[in-house]
Each structure stands twice: as structure tokens, then as C-alpha cells.
Amino acid sequence: ILIPVFVVVYFLDWRWAHEAGAFIFWLAAITDWFDGYLARKLQQSTPFGAFLDPVADKLIVGAALLMITHSYANLWITLPSIALLVREIYVSALREWMGSNGVRDAVKVSFIGKA
Image 1: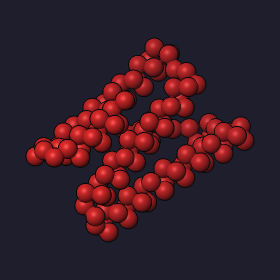
Image 2: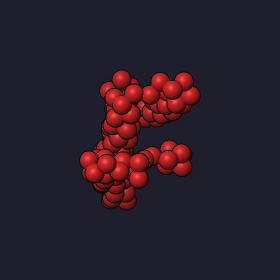
Image 3: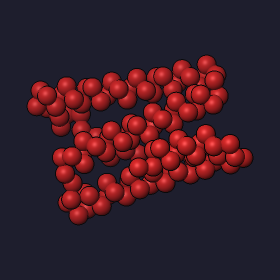
Image 4: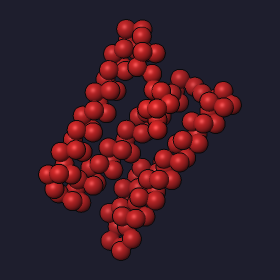
């Protein structure tokens, strides 16, 4: 829900637009962490939530990388952004492929991966 708000605020023509966008990104990250924590603590996780959470994470990170790349238009910003997006897509594809082979737990997200 916060992704469109994040994008719109980032591109508003105000003095503090980028800072407000960063705050919205931070707020989305904190609420995502808290939601996951509560789901695990209260044993309220669902297969749909387990599917949707990483998708939402990738969408907001991808949007942030694209906006930063657009704003700075610099090779030293663009190349790492491309590398991060390619890595995200590769890891998602690997998890999907491993899941289709019945070994999804081999590429399950660990605590250190969330840090």
C-alpha cells in the first residue's frame, strides 16, 4: 500500500520530497518487519502471505533503485542498481525453481538474510 505513496511523494516538487520519501520507505520497512515478527510469534503465517511478502519487498526496493537511478543519472549509481535488481530477480527465480523441485527449504530466507 505504501509503494505508490512512496513513489508519488519522492517525485513531488517540494524541498523535502526525497527525505519524506526516505521516511515512507523506512516506515514500510519497519511495518514489514513488525508484520513478519507478529506472524511468526503468533503463528499466523499463511502460504499467501509467505508468497506476497517477498514480492512486496522486491517491488519497493526495485522502485527505490529506479527512482535513485533516475534522480542521479550517474554510471556509479546505475551499475550497482542494475546489479542489485539482477540479483533480486536471480534469487527469486532460483527459489521458484528449487520450490518446483521440492527443495524450497534449501534456499529459504534465513535470519541473517533479513538483517
